[in-house]
Image (cartoon, rainbow, N blue to C red; front, side, top):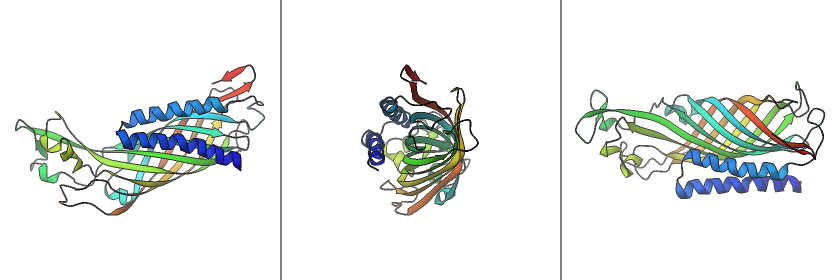
Length: 279
């Protein structure tokens, strides 16, 4: 039990560091995920140790995962957005009992925004007037991120070794999303600086995560992947003080849900023998 608690602490500490970096400096999501990858790689080397063969034993290992997927919204989120694509990066540690402890970050995006947010700025033809008095097209896009720490269990069936099988995971973290407004020439005073914040509907809050899938780890390290379905439930609310299109603050509490599938390509890191590391 103490070992499990220590592992959870080791994973939650860097996750909190990543979250604080985002909240304090508002760094981009790409830099945020790169920071998570750097922290994760340090843990993977720390945990590697001499052990038995992957083919016939459940071994301890670290994995770094790159993933893609598709999500469909549900709950309050379906009133605002349509389907979205997702890109993710994760670090996981698996012990000799096939329990996984991990942290992950994902960026999701789409161009199906159902909720009008800048109707008062548009002409009857659907254009917006730029600084020079000309007409330019307004792009309304979805942007968001998911950050979580999670725990899971691998049930070894239908695989080449006891480290492959069905995967069940549960996690807790942060969901955030907003509406991104872009113009072709980026020269519209009404959508610059603090004015833009009055339209983007930035929202975030606590999130629950579930995943059910299958993990395959090749004995020869050539093919390593995870495929499954997942769900997210975010208990969010607006983080803006005023919405210009509503002419008031949006203080509603929302349950924003995402459901879909994800494919991950895995990079396992472990030491097969005392002779060296394998990647």
